[in-house]
Amino acid sequence: MEDHPERRVPRSAIVPADDHRPRHVAVIMDGNGRWARERGLPRIEGHRRGAQSVRRVVKACADAHIRYLTLYAFSTENWRRPPGEVRALMELLERFLKERLGDLKKHRIRLNAIGDLERLPASVRQTLDRVCRATSSYTEGVLTLALSYGGRAEIATAVRRIAREVRAGRLDPDRIDENTVTAHLDTAGLPDPDLIIRTSGEMRLSNFLLWQASYAELWVTSTYWPDFTEQEFFRAIDDYSRRRRRFGGVADA
Ligand code: IPE
Ligand code: IPE
Ligand code: MG
Image (cartoon, rainbow, N blue to C red; front, side, top):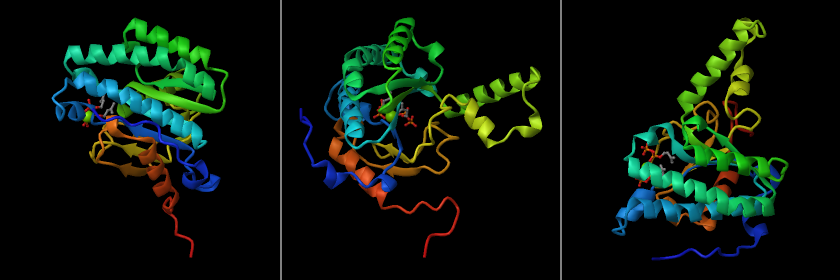
């Protein structure tokens, strides 16, 4: 089995200047199952190896001073998977949270979670709460895990929250605008993602950050998530830094 020791690359060589660096990177971590299948291993082995890629990317973000990292770890649709795989994923998640608390403290990163967390097993929820609380005062970075997350479900929940405020007389329906919606999403307080990376070559969002991704730059690699390295992450950042974001306007002359 090949391994990816963390290779040391001088930061100045790979990290673009502040104004070209993404503030918020979001990752659709895909391809664990195919990685395992191609090696004749059970799918869960791919998920296990994928957890090591998470560790690499969290560190790469800290090294590159990218403040916000959001990882799509489990979608609302992923509940449809065989119960054995779901159970194994939940166990891995809980173990990951326990084992990575030290790294989060070391890099002073706050853990945050978005999605329908009520659906998670009680022990995962408790561990998640504990790690979120233990890191709540850190301000160097924010690691957001999207768990039992779906963009459409998130928007529907935001609409319900807004409707309740209207019913309670606290909000005038004529004053509802884009900012109101943004403020009622699970991601309230986070900037929109500047860059969305997807591994395993699929060219779709799979219900990830539908509202927030409206002007995100997309970067897709055919690499399976367990093989995703720090170097490839920096390649995505470098590629991002060369793009011209026009937001519907006209490019500078
Ligand atoms: C991503 O890998 C992990 C999750 C969605 C939980 P997959 O499990 O989707 O891997 P593939 O797409 O089947 O290869
Ligand atoms: C997207 O991957 C969800 C996560 C990475 C958690 P999937 O493997 O579930 O997406 P599809 O089914 O290929 O669209
Ligand atoms: Mg997949």
